[in-house]
Image (cartoon, rainbow, N blue to C red; front, side, top):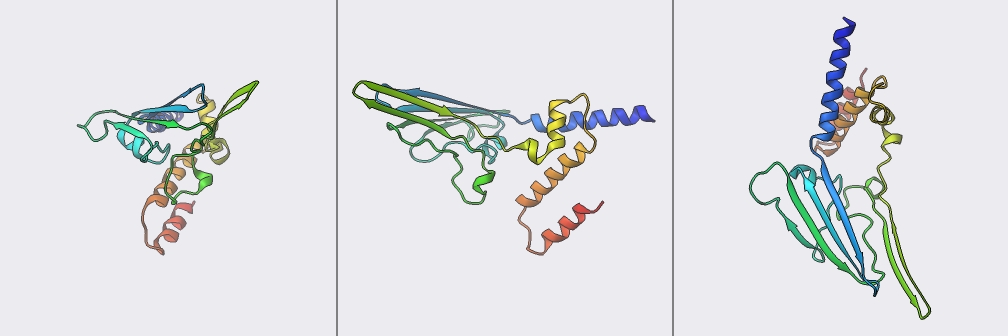
Length: 191
């Protein structure tokens, strides 16, 4: 009996991990800083169409970016999206590419990048600071973070935490009438 439970748990582990990694997207940035302080940014992404288009990692868009995309072409397993833009000397790089107002700023994946150039006759400096601020998963979902860091010894109730996240995220993204949400949340919170 115990052996079957272990096998069932391993199947859940594999299924959950596959759900996390089946549809991955690769994002790349390339910065080229010119001697005059202007800089060129080349962004490229490769992956599943739905994952490229969701708001997990918004991609550069807008009139200032030169965009090339294969997403409107024939059906494929993966797609490519690239954006290219020239920035003036000391022009601010966007901390996020998200342009709407439906997601709070605190929830956005932010990538503050600073490219600064100063030239004082005898002293010229170039500064490049970059960081990608995660969504602090280890604080929001500690059991899932523990599972990822040590998959050989999964913490108890990690699956419940993961499935709860998926259900609540689905609830948040589903247009519901104002009185339906509390009913569903009450059902989800029942033990």
